[in-house]
Amino acid sequence: MSVNFLEYMKFAISIILICFLVLVVWQWSSVSAVLDIFSTLSEEKQWSSRLKTPEDVLEYIVAHPKDVSLVAYKIGNSEKGIFYNSDEKRPLASTIKILVLAEYARQVELEIISPDELVNLADIDIYYLPNTDGGAHPNAVKELKEKAYINAANQVELRHIPWAMISYSDKAATDYLIERLGRDKLEKITASLQLNNQDVPLPIIGQFLSWSNHTFSNTPAERLNKYQAMRLKEYADEVYHWTNEWRSHQEFRAKETKQIKSRKGLKYQEQKAMTEATNCGGTARGYAQIMERIYSGSLISPQADEIIREYLEWPMQFPENQQQLDAFGAKGGSLAGIITEVWYLKPKKAQHARVAALFLKKIPGSVWFKMLQTYIQQEFQYKLLVDDKFFDLVREKLMNDQR
Image 1 (cartoon, rainbow, N blue to C red):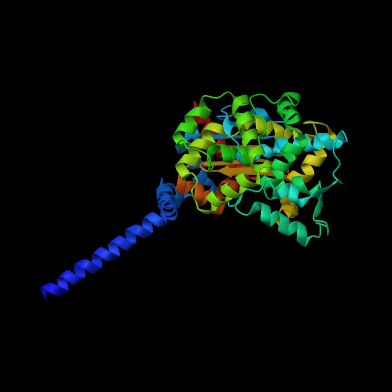
Image 2 (image 1 turned 90 degrees about the vertical axis):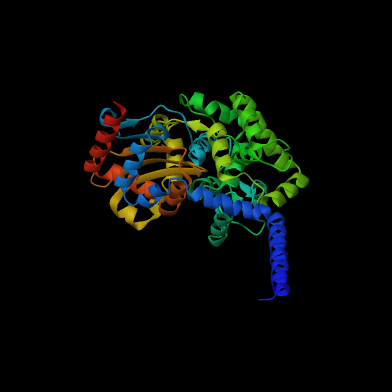
């Protein structure tokens, strides 16, 4: 091999490396996103490969006692229930939408609002933050169009907005309702319903924008420290401020949408830290009791609770559930490192309905993705409520673990 050829090869390799580095710098946000995904998926990978059965979920709970709360019992027989870290306040993610639904039902019953009112879809779309909801809002709108619930004037009846919030976990629908129902009313709901140690709902878009937006010059860590030092009302003011910025200023929306589409958001671990520190919280015991009261008609009133049940019982549309269950109401939630599930359920052959609340936080990245893909935590919760032997096994293991 000649010296000239070697020199040529060195030169060519140098050019290739320079081009590669330029490409990496030019597309650094995309490269960084890919690296973040690989890093996230490597967290406790051994656990994600193990989670195949409800029994595996139980073993995961036993191995992560500080990060899981579980409450489950038969209505009317709570003394023989499972109360595992039941009074630890945990981030709720979308599960807190139950309280938004409760306030909607209360205002419908009092005729403050009418479910027949026509709402322009644009007034809901304004709260849509692209690429942040897994397609929930576009998919909800698509179904509303397929069912001809949107008229020629692009209007939809108000009754369909809580449906989108609960069935699709539509964040835009949620934020429209929060602002429509009124901050002052929502801030009173936990006290009026005698819900101790439970946070009130906040606009989701404002929470996301408080974590990261194009106007910030400080680091995520600095923002996290700032929010951790705030009182609840101060952080709520921050959230409503950013909600107003998004809703009221087209230029802000345009710049923020551009940043989101360029993937210049928070990394998974940064999202996880923000969520744990600032997301609205509640306890497993409190939310199990909320579900019990909704089922029994004692949360607000029998009439208002019937409205709530109409929306929460969306799982009953599936034929298999209709064959096996008399009632099934549910609302789950997920954010980075967090999964929450709250249910009431009555098997056809059972004398009593059962309730369960499962709250998980600090979930390793690989496990979080596995749960979102397989819903294995829901299989665990379903078996817990319909299989008495499995219920007794879980109770024995977790109660022994807490002694």
